[in-house]
Length: 117
Image 1: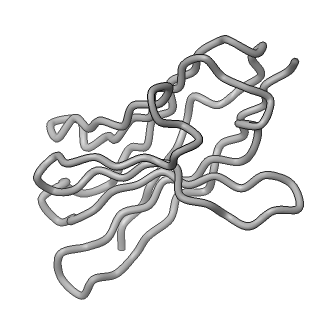
Image 2: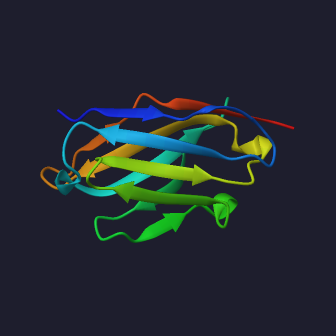
């Protein structure tokens, strides 16, 4: 069983920055893709950013140039650095991982990000 624990959310003014962290209970060697998603009130969960086992990254158009996903294998943690935040970035942010064996997806519990205008 894989456990993911997110942290780093909070309330920030527009234009500010936050760094989200997602710590895994097992080595990153067990995972292929790792990603961050978000869900705004009344909306579906959407993909924000992903990073592959090889380190390739991809981003939603709405966050390109502002957000950066990166990982630290030694700390078993994947990060989402969010700069130039906008009110529309408000939502609950979730990390997920996809395992190498069995292609199983695990989700964290989510962390709230609120951007005030």
